[in-house]
Length: 134
Image 1 (cartoon, rainbow, N blue to C red):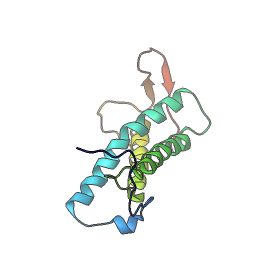
Image 2 (image 1 turned 90 degrees about the vertical axis):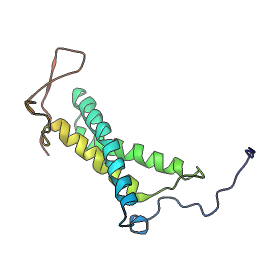
Image 3 (image 1 turned 60 degrees about the vertical axis):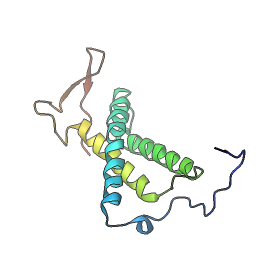
Image 4 (image 1 turned 180 degrees about the vertical axis):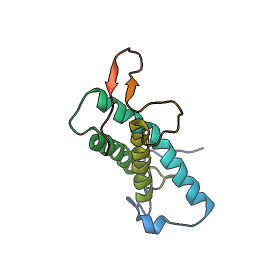
């Protein structure tokens, strides 16, 4: 196997349009589900961390952080010959971040018995105040 010292990416596309990347096939929807699911933990933990720091706008900061991570991933993929940079991925990753944030808030109470009013920080016995509702 020969790996060149330099390579040139032909037809380099940076953040292809979401409409251009849309294909109503299972592969497209599978990628959407994977992107959303992959960023749910990021949104949950970004928001949990930011609430524990008692920042002024933890929701907005968590969403911007999720978007920044997603945008960084997509821009790096521009330079990888086997990957594509797509705006759909950024949008679905931000959506996953928002879902994770809502899970932490208790708006999507998928765990029975978990009260949104009282949360205990992992590794400590101190209570974290409940985050504000949108």
